Structures are given as C-alpha cells and as structure tokens.
Length: 66
Image (tube, rainbow, N blue to C red; front, side):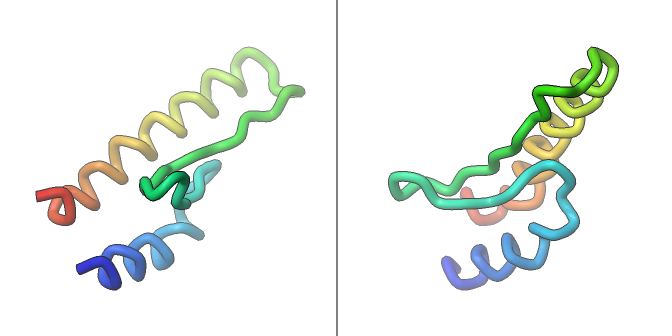
C-alpha cells in the first residue's frame, strides 16, 4: 500500500496549486508557500487554495488512512 500511496502523491503533486507533498520526521505532509508580496486579496485566495488542497488531499488519501 505504501508504494501505491507514494505513486498517487507523485501523480497528484503537479496538479495541486501552491502545495507539495513530502515526508518530514517520518510523517507525510502537504505544505505550501505564501508570497510575502501578495496583496490582502491574493493572500486570502492563497490561504483558501491551501486549505482546499488540504481537504482534497484528506479525501483523496482517506482509503490509505483506514
């Protein structure tokens, strides 16, 4: 199952805007970067996108968490 999980992460990684999958301290993570030059409106959009990515990742990988 681990190989399937990793293959799924690699396949999805290019299509997830502002976010990347990784492993930190033995834990799988989804992380993103925000621009320090963003306007307030852009920052709100970036935060909403990162939040949506987290929800989508949770739904996509739910079968691996059972």
